[in-house]
Amino acid sequence: AAVAGRLRDPDAGEVRLDGTPLPDLSAAALHAAVGYGFERPVLVGETVGAAVGCGADPAPVARAAAIHDFVERLPHRYGTPLAEVAMSGGERQRLGLARALRAERLLILDDATSSLDTVTEYRVNRALTDRADRRTRVVVSHRVGTAARADLVAWVAAGRIRAVGPHAVLWDDPGYRAVFRS
Image (cartoon, rainbow, N blue to C red; front, top):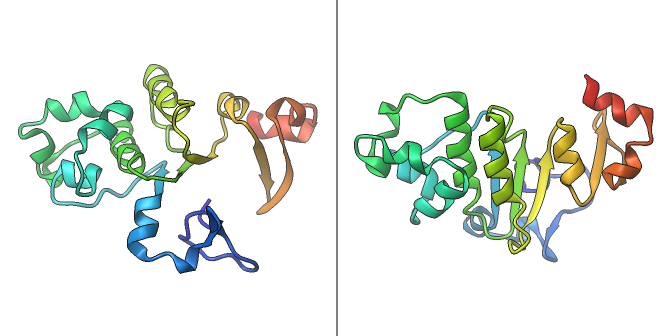
């Protein structure tokens, strides 16, 4: 996941985004194209709106990440200083997801819904799996339901891809099933 969005360069070969090698993209172009959602996001910006919107209107992505209602209850809504906001792990995670959703071409989600309750996770997953949304998604997860909804699963073990295929096909392998029991 880190290599896909150029947080880390590959040991060999190259990674391309829509045919363009990642090193050929400017930092601004890469930032606009790729969004990361992490289990424990680091929120950057003076205000909640700056942390979420990255210069754009934050409300649409905040709604998709199921965090807009929380923000609307803050004293100055999106203008509330980030340092003054007490939030749970799930609220922080949803703010990070909102920031990631502004990406134009690639979403990389690394256990990005692990702190959400079941109902909120369902709402967020509906936004993330909208078929009208043509962005590519790379999802790192240890949840069987997430793997089952994926078009294609890359089973990674010890830093190597062990198998690639639909979840239903991989499920026949006892080693793959064991990943979800641990």
